[in-house]
Length: 114
Length: 114
Picture 1 (cartoon, rainbow over the protein chains, first blue to last red):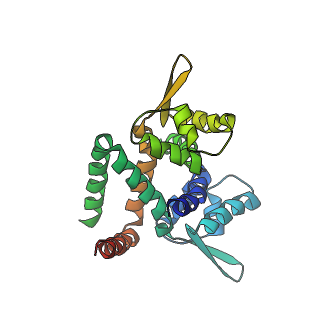
Picture 2: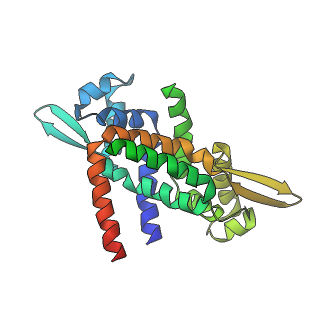
Picture 3: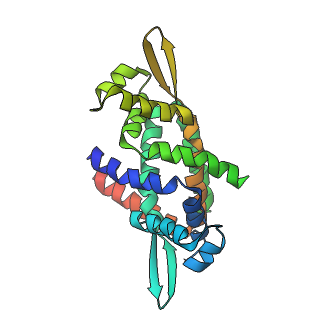
């Protein structure tokens, strides 16, 4: 029911409410990276960076695999689907104002498919 | 630049990372409501509820107007636009992975309609 969906959404939105974590998602969008490579882009101690990685992993947005001493991160974009669904659902409620936005997003979708 | 956009996004995502605040957005999607009417739907003390209203107002997602003792809340959905843009931008990066997801979700949608 609605409440269950809402409960899924809270940790997802919380995970996105941080520039480091959004940057990690952005970087992983081009393909898997090791934690070391990801950490290079961020000016913080490794333990702090690992907390961000763990938070993303707990939401399912990324998955990590360890091979020896190397931990590789993969993006699982479908885990963000509830966020997209929530926005789309709200946009339907807003009606006119958001119709223009929907048209824009459809255009983006179409561009991807071309 | 990218960093400015990121800074806009953090308080927006943080505002959405709470079921009460998302419920307020949902309720206001059908039209303006007074704080009292909105608060009726939530089982919490009024000062706690007002903190949620203030947090939403600070992001620009809602605006409030006071007339006498009555405070009315209005939704400003275009304030959520950076969130939609961020998702659309990331989805473009994901490319293939999201196309498969879209195909899967279309299939799910079709199942639901049958």
